[in-house]
Length: 364
Ligand SMILES: Cc1ncc(COP(=O)(O)O)c(C=O)c1O
Image (tube, rainbow, N blue to C red; front, side, top):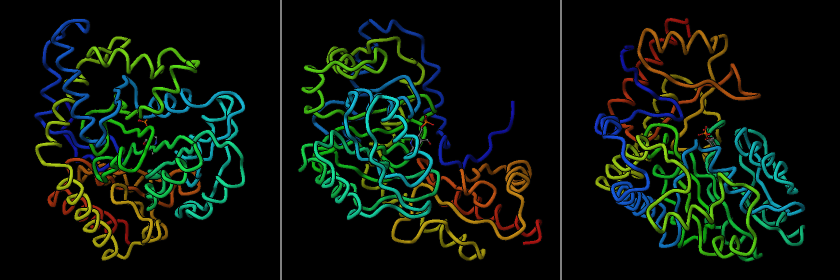
């Protein structure tokens, strides 16, 4: 088996041995009492992460399934949705709205920046009957986090629209108090700041959404959130759950709550400052403007002349540190470092040293 490398990707991220071991627990009947106990515990912990007293579900799918679920449950043909677009994942979100028959009003900014709250406000005001706002909190493709989730959510609610936040690469590294801010659906993925293996999507679902779905069933079976809520109330999932991943998620959420959300958020703050400062000391320029830079995904330009794939290959093979490349217009020009989950001083130091030494070997 390959030696475990330090996974500094913007997800999946490093998973503790305790969480990995949890997956070795026995296969059980997913319609039996043991699973009910497990799933009720998972939902309870997930609700504490979301800071909600309302609904939550866990889907056996990656984050994209969570996004699909949010869109297909809320959007009906002809519905208008406002979607800030500032990178790959927000672009995909707008396309998903269109695939569901909706009209996506894109509020765009250059990659590396974020649309302003004023732009968002104008888009909401310029269109009658906006059904939903779909906001990516943290654009993993560019390392940009919007600083106005609460304000945007209130804006959506004030106009009668649903507020959906894709916090796939941020929740746990950031706090998003779903009930207090009025978020209708908040989506996160198991493989990011929760520090579980990839394969599960966690969603908070407001009572407002639950009521809406009772009168307007969505055109999807696998992602029908109404069914997930109904089954969830009995401690079950409508379809066969990815059992080992539920064991792992249960343990990862336990770890998160043992540390405490506040402390975990503060640790992400501190570690991201270390990464940004360390890269700046190496003479590297961050992609994101300071006011919108993400603390869970650090994107940085390469110095002139460094070949992206060769650099990352060298970093992985010689230093055992795995980082990601850039997306779309940033492909080849940018690398991205995850600052998620288990991130600690030792990981930051190892990563910065490895990047510095590898750049030196490349003559930069
Ligand atoms: C903001 C955001 N949205 C959606 C996704 C898609 O998630 P997944 O790759 O788990 O399907 C990602 C993945 O990195 C993401 O960062």
